Image (cartoon, rainbow, N blue to C red):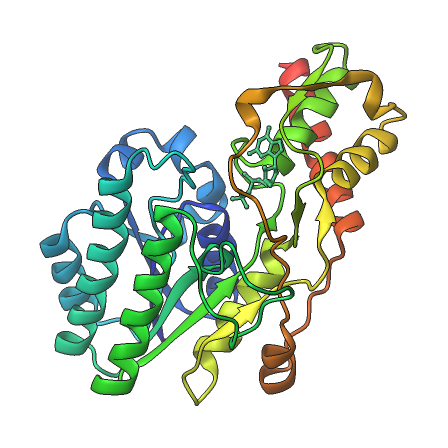
Length: 327
Ligand code: GDP
């Protein structure tokens, strides 16, 4: 039975990945913070339905010796490094923690793989934030990187570390440069889940307005399940390489809002209030990915479009809140 180790297993992508690997007979290990084990109901809710099939190891991504020890003990066949300090700060708050944690954990895990499990296939979760203020759109694997945030810088450094271990140490190390990907498991700090939960609250008479920033911003949104299937194709390919994973369509935040509200028979403009707190200072180039390489070489293609993602997110939020109401 192949062994997989996942950092960030309790997040949106980690939870879908764990389910997908379990279905295929993998032995699945995950790294979680000790506090998450103590607060399972809130912190491990996304993996609650498979918890009894997982082996969880308490360790923070800041503890490089802890990460080393876990890799030494498990000797995984696959290591998916999805965990990170993910707050995309435009004001450079938390920049030390973001750089130290993201770069330090990636370096420790790659070094541990080299030392204790050199056969292991390593996946690094890079991000469209590495393109930042991109010179052109759509972006592909040849587009120059130009990160605009410390988070983007950390994801670019991780990308290059993973490439260096592949090219110089012959580790089967790959990176997915993933564009935004959403699902009912998305956190409310992201605009998609904020729109969905507020639309449902308005529909239920529990809220009167929705406060947002720039509605003219564009994002290339896909479904997290499709992007997890891309991660697996990337690591399971014989030739290690890096790939852009994207839908190829950039939609306005406004389009997302109008669609979600109209599905609940609400007129978005009646409830929208512009709020300067949610505007960002630099959003020049719309990020939109060109995923032709992964489509061509690994036969990946997305199975969800934005309308179906919005519908699924709304259905789940309606079900979740109606359970809450009936309690
Ligand atoms: P990310 O910035 O790509 O990590 O994803 P988000 O979901 O946080 O933001 C997507 C886009 O929505 C950005 O261009 C934001 O400027 C825009 N946006 C507009 N209003 C809001 C808001 O109230 N919250 C968030 N998070 N984003 C907003």
